[in-house]
Image 1 (cartoon, rainbow, N blue to C red):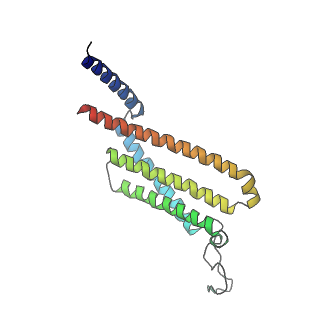
Image 2: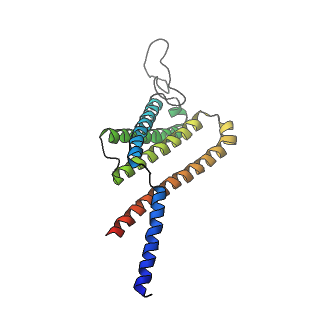
Image 3: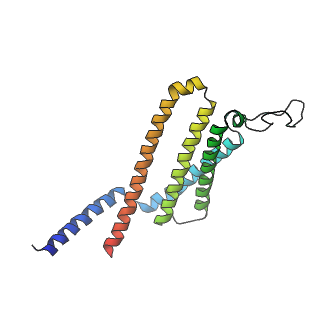
Length: 199
């Protein structure tokens, strides 16, 4: 057996392993999966856009009501009628809440727009784009929830029990997000290697 034969055996073994991993992360019925995922993405993105829209108009802690006299003026009142109460009492936390809520709303609306535009989900780039969009959407939704819960939970309760709970949940979320990213990168890597091997 010469060096060229050994190299061919290694290449065949490498391709065989690559095919096994590729079959493991591939979808069995691609057409059915694409149809299901389009409907599921549409539903989830629409619900998330609705949730974030509502939480922007009716933020945690509520808004200050108008005066009973019917006067809507803002003189000497802090916050003004119709403005968020927690934006004045906890401005830093409220700013983070608003940033993550806005990112979540924009990314879920973008996913809805891309789905309605009819972009082909069987294209690898567009499938990757949808996956990234939903990862951003769901991650920012989780952070919006965390900041919203922190603002409305009394300090003694928040600092004793929920801080460690949210820390553990955050670490689990990062691990799950890392696993999803690993699978997507693995699928992309296998797809690239398969294309190179065919040439």
